[in-house]
Length: 259
Image 1 (cartoon, rainbow, N blue to C red):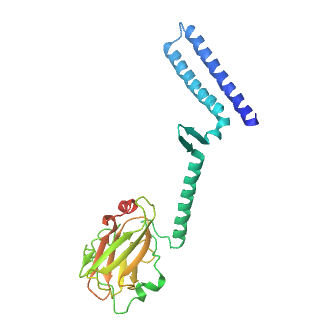
Image 2: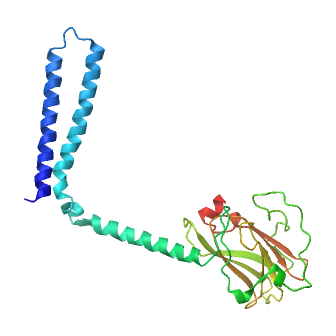
Image 3: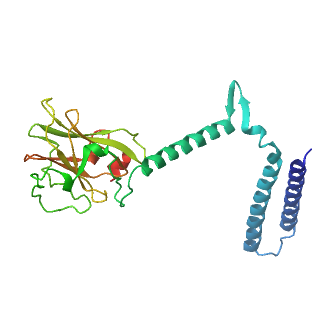
């Protein structure tokens, strides 16, 4: 018998003895309560029961303490449950997920509180507004009417028009706190996109306006986000404006829907 078992045994007997003493006093008080105020006696009983319950819990803990390691694995019928192994596996999974998210965040520029991360597009397919073609000034846009989602209702409200389509593909699970996704502009007739596409993002992005060069017939923009917003797109050199509310996109994760 080791030290912890001796200690647990002593603790158990102390708690049990205390329970006996409290119960004895409670019984003695009930026999001698003639002439005592009933309210005072009721309060004493309630306090005594509370003490008994706490000491009883302490006695149970003391009794089980030496056997904690033994119950990490037990059998019930033909089913064998390994608590310690299961908990360890879940902890490892969570640690791996946290490490993955930290790596993704480290590859980006963390921005404001609206829930967006700067784009992680390959730099050779990304141009800032100043690097875009000189003959492609940003078109005149309506005034912002929804400050929390400034692109909403400013790009015509349509994700498809004039032979172009703006769509999104979510690469994360429904309950993921940080979402990997890809915005895509393509032609509806299957022909390759030949124009630059300027994406208008939420103001919490480091670059609110990003011009993407076509590649493989499409303009693609991968992003990491942790909230929803409306994306606007201008097909550079044309009068085509596209608008997509991520909250209403098919397959949007929960964190996107919450905005």
